[in-house]
Amino acid sequence: MPTQRALGMVPIWVILPVLCLVMTIARADGSTKSAGSDQPQPKPVEKKIAFEMRDKPWSAVLEWLADQSGLPVVASSKPTGKFTFVPPKGGVKSFTLDEIFDILNESLIEQRLILIRRTASFTIVPADERIDPGPLPRFTIDDLENLPRTQLAQVCLPIRAIPPSDAVTEVKKSWVRLDKSQR
Image 1 (cartoon, rainbow, N blue to C red):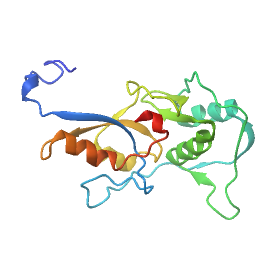
Image 2: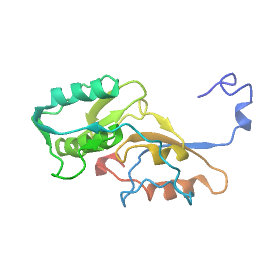
Image 3: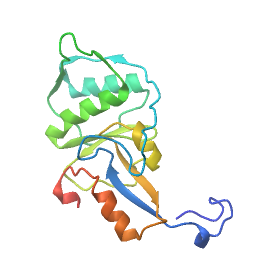
């Protein structure tokens, strides 16, 4: 719970209630448009990286990710086997780190794992077990447009115009569940 000092000496009871929910950023329709936003915000241009891997052990893939992103991979759960990603001939062969993050997560989900980007590192956790929201980064609703489709995050929503129970119902409509056990 924030202290009065962290809130700039504003008494806690004066602060508007905030509902913090752990949710995936991907929506059921695959879009990332935030609710209540009529026009999408432009995403900053990111550097594209040539990306193609054939029969690479996952340890080499994660080492490559750490080198490219500048963030270490800290994981107690590790994928097994090898990873292959071959873009189509004549197609896109360079991707942003966000796009690569999504490609890796699409492959990891086959092993019931998910790659999570934290503030200072990446981690891999079992996707079919309850995920501790503590280490997940927090974002505002406006940040959602600029995150990868498969990024897990905490989103804090100010509740002003509707009852909290209605807010929960509205947010749940946009969730994509990895497993029914996380309900």
